[in-house]
Length: 483
Ligand code: ADP
Ligand code: MG
Image 1 (cartoon, rainbow, N blue to C red):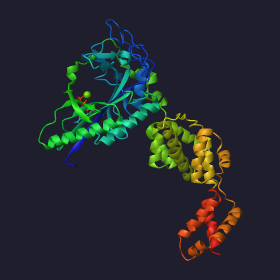
Image 2 (cartoon, rainbow, N blue to C red):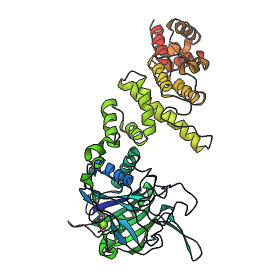
Image 3 (cartoon, rainbow, N blue to C red):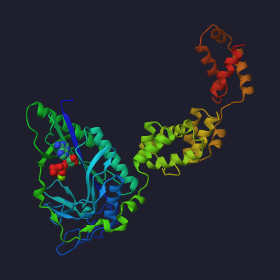
Image 4 (cartoon, rainbow, N blue to C red):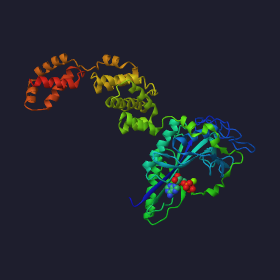
């Protein structure tokens, strides 16, 4: 497959989480279900109305720009992108063309071209009859557009990039970036070439999930490769993704920038960003929380967690916060930290997910409490394992109970008889009895049959109703049997 070079560049839109819209004070509420509620003459494009720039929206894009190490523009302006469509009431979209807010930067090694700010369009739904409905609640919502350089070479890499950007938007609170809700939308530019030059690119729109992005890129790469192998040419065009058919389809031939007749919007002031103190790189940096890649590095360095656990926690900040509270309550040796991550991710998350799927009353999940289990109580469970008081089986049962009842680990352990018997004297007595009653097995063991020891240990577990510390059982058996 090396004969064909795959090149991908992404264009990702994200709706910003601001109080009001981009150029008016209509509410920006992605959850509003009633159509055409959050609208006003400005976002409806009535003649004679004047837009005003939403400073909060500008600041949010600049924050992202600083986070990715991009260059904040000294000078910036808004342009009109002219086209005619029912979802664009003014006949143009206010966007940025020549002077975007941010130039350059990178995310996990993928270089960015630019990040700019524009307004979202209305939402149209095409009904079965010969008409369409248009909901203007979304018209004028602040929309960030981030464009990457054509430096991505596989569907996997593209999806990883989009996921990392989503985390960045969520960590910073710039956008909820929920793809199902359309708060983040991915467009992929794809080309395949068997020469040194780039191939003809095709743009695929409407990628509303990571899976759709992955499938659509895979589909296009195969289609381009087959077309080249047939000796035919790829047409430069815009395609859509058909989720039902799992195929892309031709939408329209690619428009050029000049088709949009871009020009600076005369109704809006130009901005000299460098003259606004709160937009200085230093001020913007102060607003940033720990970023996803910073958290990843810290987790790898300070905790030595496996990649799987680190990725889970970086991808789920609520659990990460919970995890960090839990490890406050233990000795921070590698083994205990790994155990906390393990019981949190395998057991606690496992149980809560199952509840979700089984449509049983879902458990509350917050930074300080999952179900009724506090991070401190989870730490107490891990301490008991460390002290040899609890088996891993016992820990699982205890956690399941603590999630529901919220009782303290030590209380549940006593109530459910989960405390491992580590009392050597008592175990020695029980073991002596077992040896007495299983003479034949003991002889077999002495004749070299290792499996007999397992059987005897099993009898010990049975006699103590599973509460014996298995390590201790084994040690005492070996001692007694060697006599
Ligand atoms: P256009 O002028 O058609 O909008 P741009 O140069 O602005 O094209 O690039 C749009 C997106 O397409 C960017 O993400 C860019 O990285 C990507 N891109 C450009 N050329 C190619 C190519 N040959 N193959 C894949 N992606 C490309
Ligand atoms: Mg372009």
